[in-house]
Amino acid sequence: AAASLTPSATVPQSVTQSDKSVDPALINQLIFELYGLLAKNSLTTRKRCAQLQEAVSGLEVTELVANLVTHVNELNFNAAEQSLQILEKNLSAKLDSTPT
Image 1 (tube, rainbow, N blue to C red):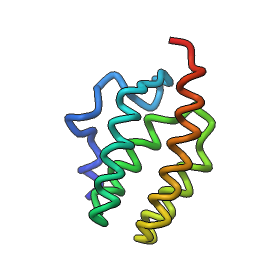
Image 2 (image 1 turned 135 degrees about the vertical axis):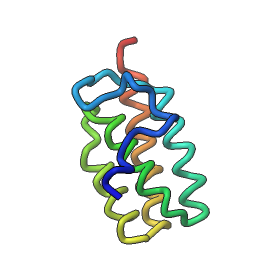
Image 3 (image 1 turned 90 degrees about the vertical axis):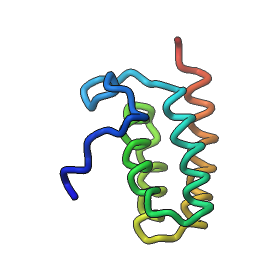
């Protein structure tokens, strides 16, 4: 299972752990996908959460993402969706204030 941690085709190769640039389009795409996956109680949610966690690193939302990941790992999809809504609101404010 560890070998499957390579980025999927939806994640641009330019987004790496050492590259702290923020890609709002990627973040919005992952949030959109997460809502759909949570609605279906899909285990793929875990993979998207990990991708989102990496995509938002450096945006000071670590605790909010950690709450989301915890709920997903506990398979508490309703709480995960609430956490995602809170995260999305916080990210919207941060992304709007990020210079382009």
